[in-house]
Image 1 (cartoon, rainbow, N blue to C red):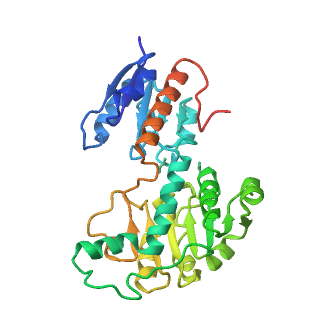
Image 2: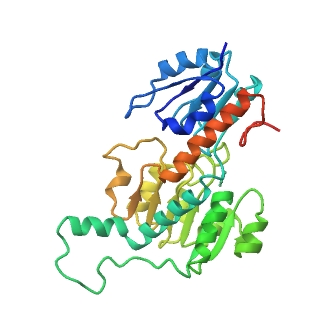
Image 3: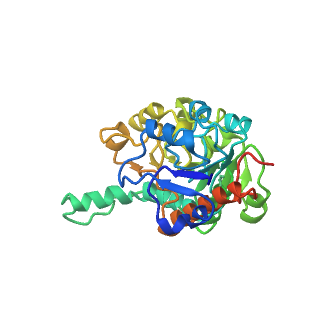
Length: 322
Ligand code: GLV
Ligand code: GLV
């Protein structure tokens, strides 16, 4: 029997040629809707490989029902949607897409920081709503970015690349991470500080940590209370790292000056979500890696990861292999 790979969302056909070399492929082909859970479970019961989105829950239940499964290629660098331990026990290789999205995600993170600081989206709305009737000295006056202190929580590849962007703006760079980053310190002049020092002294607090038991809810009301009143919080990691209602209150009570968010506790956030009501909070729909070039490259890498595992070769990026 040929291996069978199910792709949970429509992706450009030309990006998945590598999988077709070794397997029969079926793609969920509804343009605007994710695959329903029941369909995913059904497909998983036949599949040797799954090409998944960060919105698909690859949990114990699914893995129990997938006796032939050898590989899951997740179209993301993060893999908190996957029970990696359960997959490892069952000999299922979990692959992700690091590196190819690093620069693109760092670009978006910096764009979010700048948009919040300089009130970009608010200012555009101001024109669109016909409110621009004259120029005035403090019209849409925001905060400077250059020469300010950026505090990066989670100094992985993306964090380092955001730090590199920050050097171009003459920022003072500090970071907190489980392990020290020699690259950030030596090449980018970043200083390692404790989490408390970071949140108390940064003008921009940027979260890029993966979602784990340790980072879940780490940005809570105590943390927002310790931030500068002028601080801007940027989250391009995972929404689960933030207690969202605490962030809403911190904004409401002017404990911090604003936020730039690409990720949420529950995605998509509804149109009437309180975070969307604040002019000083910039919200994006989880598009960190979303340039055409990078998303295409992520699809190709995912396809090669799956092909390699099905061929008995090493994948380019796996999270549970030696
Ligand atoms: C996106 O959030 C990713 O993990 O790639
Ligand atoms: C995480 O893997 C990162 O690239 O920061």
